[in-house]
Length: 148
Length: 148
DNA sequence: CATCACGAAACAATAAAAGTTTCATGAGTT
DNA sequence: AACTCATGAAACTTTTATTGTTTCGTGATG
Ligand code: FES
Ligand code: FES
Image 1 (cartoon, rainbow over the protein chains, first blue to last red):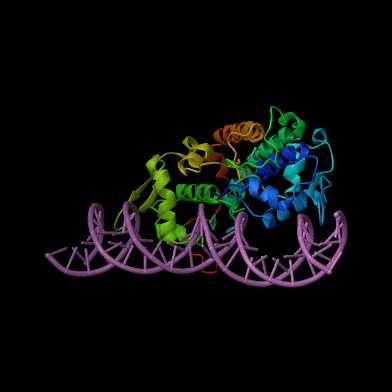
Image 2 (image 1 turned 180 degrees about the horizontal axis):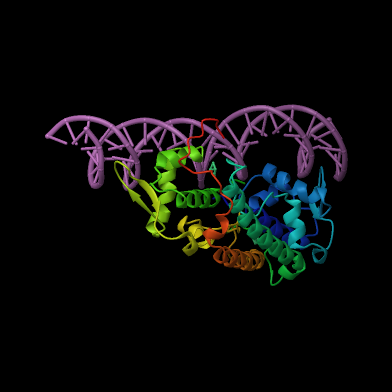
């Protein structure tokens, strides 16, 4: 089952951004993530809509943090990415009037809801500044001539 | 993100199978699930390997429950299906030596592990006989002339 | 006014899961 | 023994969500 690493990647980016003076361009972020600028814009758009980052066009433009890392939680970013569900597990819907299917789906659903609630609760407890430790000199804008 | 409804479907099938006298063929199960026999065999193979069902070739062959529903838990079936992870959320691995990526992944991983542990614990608490209620007359081998 | 960088939309490539086809084998039936 | 039914296994095709790409428009800087 395919994994969605956007949360991990965006957190990584945001924390690096906090160490920058100038905005980070989509191009630069894309290089850092081994992807391309359009994908970066697509993903960051959700964060901008929620007000966590701002984007500026033109010369010297790019992406900047709009709020302090201490005011952003994992849950904030998770929500901003608009992921439907955190689980790979889904329910069947072929026999919606079959009492057995109903009972089975109810049982699974109960568990998923409880587990997701715990997960979101934990995500809400972690602010990004707690993760910005020991960064030393791994800035986003550093020219890594000797790659990776 | 794609959903995996195999757990829900297999539970449904197993409970219906419990109400049958004769083995259920892959063909019959496939019809019930709006899929095809090979997919059914592929999925049920995992359950057979763990001993929850048996398969018999030839005339009158097919799939049968090997143990009582009360001796099978949601966790058993979940494990038998061999799903790697229950989450759509993955970790990044582009900069494995970057302390920020490490911290981010650690934080996410901690939460996922805790949430998955809760989920598996709950799955272990539910035996299939608890779901086999009010089935009335929806047998797997019933000829539904007036479809679905 | 030239360049930079985002925004948006359309399109192509990728990859995982599901679906399909084919053949072999074993188990009952006649 | 011959026939039919049903699983097992392997190779292949289709589907679909996501990612990646291309192109053009717009605003901002110098
Ligand atoms: S399968 Fe449960 S009733 Fe059609
Ligand atoms: S990005 Fe965190 S260091 Fe290369």
